[in-house]
Image 1 (cartoon, rainbow over the protein chains, first blue to last red):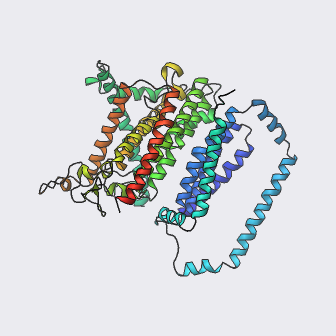
Image 2: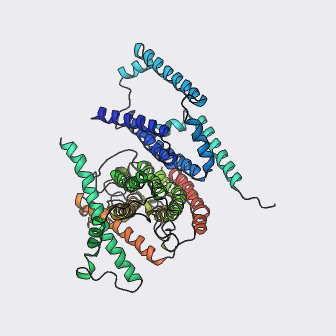
Image 3: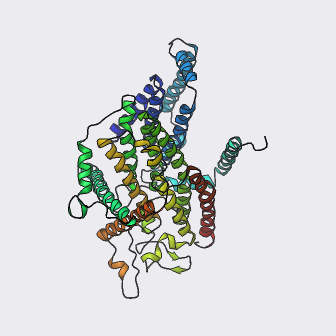
Length: 180
Length: 357
């Protein structure tokens, strides 16, 4: 049952992602992107990362995707048709650039899978032997909270300051100039 | 096999409940509107108009599905499903009685907040797919409002979660009554673990949580796009907002989603702040009222009656207060409710460290 669901989610993610980049209708593509992100959240669940899955739904679906749709709605119609005329030719330069990047990434993934299959790192073998693994019913959020406040406190604080900077910057940019 | 069957029966049961609830909530809403405006409300169909909403739904189900010629047919058809699906999924983690809930997860509360934000995508889909300026304007207003009001909702929930120390809605409900394993203090002073009743509810565990609940209630009204926050639907300006073009069963689903959302936020508020399925009657000496009124059926009864009461208050507010202007709406959210929620969050942290140790 779990395997069927996993492959269903994987198929949904890949299929909808392929459709997203091939659709001519940008609005439909953006709404379809929602399915891709949602399927990705489902795949995170299979890695027992329920917190990451929910964050994926909350941040990407509830925030980033709506932002993208708004950006699409507010952008110039002629600019969009311009972009479409470039990407319609198959042997255009942007296509080959992206091809190179994706092939490189695929090579890295395949290389890592082959390497790990032959010789699994010692710490993974040790943890499996001592039964030090996450179960589906474990409370991951509590673990995350403790780790964030102890081991990873510096990165956590740096990220929060960074986000605060972005927030202040956004507020500054959108403020009305009064003395003009 | 029985497990698989259970996975099918539970959603169907919840769907049936939502449908029946919507039918009677619409009737109740029209009667309350009649009472507030000093008229009778529906009286023609059946005794006291009781069959009015059943007649309405039969009419809606028989209607032809009309898609406007200029509309984006796929988005137009998919939007009601997304809107209803998002709200329907929210019901999957809310407890009805002790250990009686569809899914007992450690991330229940967080899951609801994430899932409900999908509702916004559905509304935008409906507004864009209709290809109608009133629909699009309504959808844009709805998104602006829902995203803004998600922040006070989130902050008020965080303030409560800081006190309860868990995101599991089942555990949150357990820690507000006599079945708890942890000591509960009324206002941080008096141990009421054995007394139970309304004294053990979260809003009385720390005094500032009453303010937090008021913030949550107001912000959740805005999340459901209910009056006085119904500028996305504003009949006088936008005809019907994002659902202008919808008819027949598609409109029925949007309508169902609105009432399901009302019940969902009412139930969420009840579980987190008002004790969930716990009885409001405390143990007084040898009069063990709390113990007598705790159990599976009592739990469902208390959850239902508390939630329906909150839904009633939502309806009462809708027919009493006039609609906000868009700028007033944003002022209320960003200048009053968010700072207040932040202050309450700070108080929660201090309360947890200094009082509840």
